[in-house]
Image 1 (cartoon, rainbow, N blue to C red):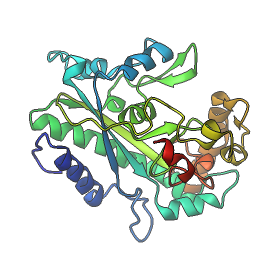
Image 2 (cartoon, rainbow, N blue to C red):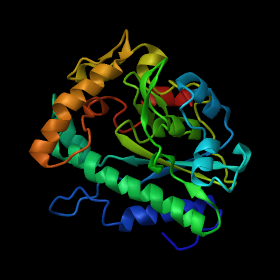
Image 3 (spheres, one colour):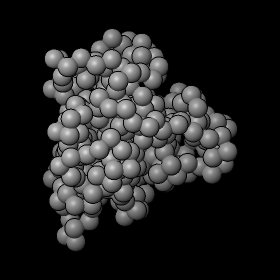
Length: 293
């Protein structure tokens, strides 16, 4: 990234892609120097988009709005929500990672575990680099997921939830909609990771091609067909009549896949992701649903 950045969306996109292309940390740490992620995609939401307040009301009072996250980082520089933009980006899994993961049925493949561990380390660097570059250029910015107070809490309505959701932010910014497994289906598919930054800057807002329909790009919710992610779950935590069993999913990751990845690949984190591949929305929005966008 450059040492200064103008309030131009095109320059911002170029800066993110430059960091993606040149950062040594964008690596699976395999012989041959494979990148952890495919080329990023970017979108922007208004800091005062009504969905932020709506999600806070649904999830719980602990959930941050952009205005609240910004205030935690810059307590002496208060900003109204309307002064803020929220930059959301996605990082697609590579074709090689997806192909390897498709062969697995109960445990994550090596590349997938490495992308979740080493790739997420890069994602954290990208969040911080983007925020610090904008701040140094005179546009105070914060990556909410990197704030010291970022945590998981118990929501009365939804069980365990983080106080800033990269997936919900990406939905608001127009990157994708939720599927049966609670994963976000984007134009790059569901096999992706997300990051975001809140900045005191006015940027062009990305239109939501699906309007306010938060399940528009899921075949099951849109047409009552598919459900391919359900049999891909080794914990039986996805069903077409009950959706996503979060406690069952987290228990399988905590007790099975995370210890396996640590022992087998020497990685930490909490990989699984079997429901994100070998499905129609692995790397795209199902073509039958694009007319809905």
